[in-house]
Length: 135
Image (cartoon, rainbow, N blue to C red; front, side, top):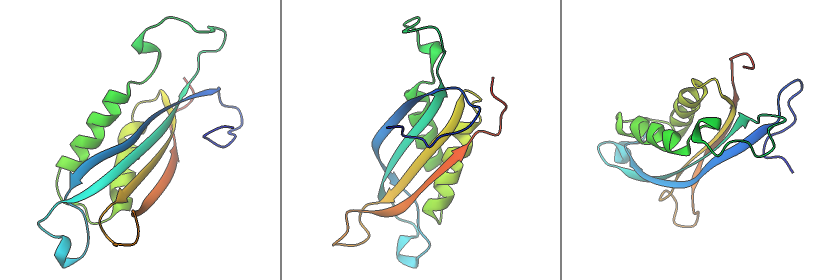
């Protein structure tokens, strides 16, 4: 089962992910959300083109996109200051990730964790595809 839906005329993708990145963020539109941080959870999954015909290939990081780079991007975006909507933060993460032409598709979930006592989280999940031509 593929994490990403079929995408005609594209190379096979390797799914790289970061799961349950917990951060404190200045986020929210309501008065009680201004000037305070809230716990958020960020999940990202992104498709990097496989190199067909290489089997396993070289055991080198430059064959893929480092999930550390994605974690650093997310942390940096969260530190940049107050964001009103989880949707805005998710879009900024997607744009930052897709600036790397090796990333063909990105799925981002941003959750606020402490909003309702009877719900583990509320948030948004988006999927964005690369505007770059296939390398």
